[in-house]
Image (cartoon, rainbow, N blue to C red; front, side, top):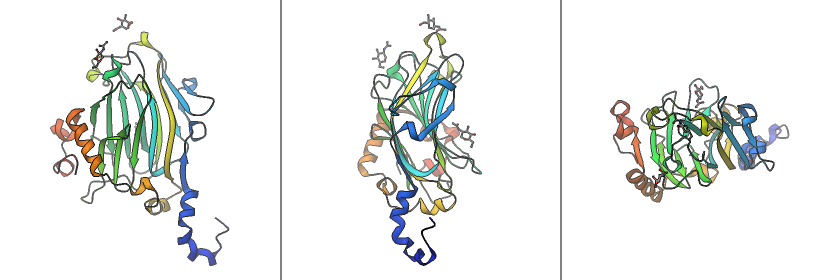
Length: 288
Ligand SMILES: *[C@@H]1O[C@H](CO)[C@@H](O)[C@H](O)[C@H]1NC(C)=O
Ligand SMILES: *[C@@H]1O[C@H](CO)[C@@H](O)[C@H](O)[C@H]1NC(C)=O
Ligand SMILES: *[C@@H]1O[C@H](CO)[C@@H](O)[C@H](O)[C@H]1NC(C)=O
């Protein structure tokens, strides 16, 4: 940035689009953008950098994480879940805050099943350390038969989780005191681990190691996000100058979400569990 001498500073505003290019993360390659998190050789990167396979065996699960931390973005990954009997496994694709004062987290958790077509997706949103916003959905396809696209859109207005571009969960930024993740960076993660204690039929069906290794495949990493470079990013990353940043849930998306609620969501913290019912968030309906 040294070339911006002080007499050029007034022109900074004109340069904002350029700065955005400098500070944005726009990538489509696991090879250059993610690194090993745990599980040693159980994380396998394809030669062309387009696919990562994660294995869970009797000794360990495995995982990767993005090298960059970001504030807001659109995160697309195509995933083929563990085929065959995957009961007890939990595969994930999530964003978690990196070392801030409190913990924000946006989760996709794929809960294995004896029968692949009965896989369950759990989504959750943590803001300022508080989660308890689980939603569980049954899918309209067998997610073990092929790759499907799973996306998180996180911008100053809302968080939307999508499956094959269909919104399945929505969390709106509000002004009534409910915290929204907009003050700190997050890192992207993919993992697989043993969730026998709770994942399948509330823990009644455990991991059966005679079906190991359990392998989940991630492809076509496609991230468009605002790179975190320090506290200046809070203002900078909130400036609407990219399609994913300005997107607000559309009427069509609300209709699709309502359809998903009626037909595929079988657990929602707002309607299924009185102990998690939060009047401020839930009273105005699921799709505010
Ligand atoms: C996210 O990070 C917090 C610490 O900031 C940690 O307690 C939590 O377990 C992490 N979540 C996951 C799913 O790794
Ligand atoms: C798996 O689930 C699907 C859909 O729920 C069902 O049609 C199929 O018969 C099941 N297969 C087995 C082997 O249970
Ligand atoms: C584990 O799977 C094997 C092979 O399908 C089966 O024979 C065995 O009964 C299973 N064990 C349990 C505890 O379900």
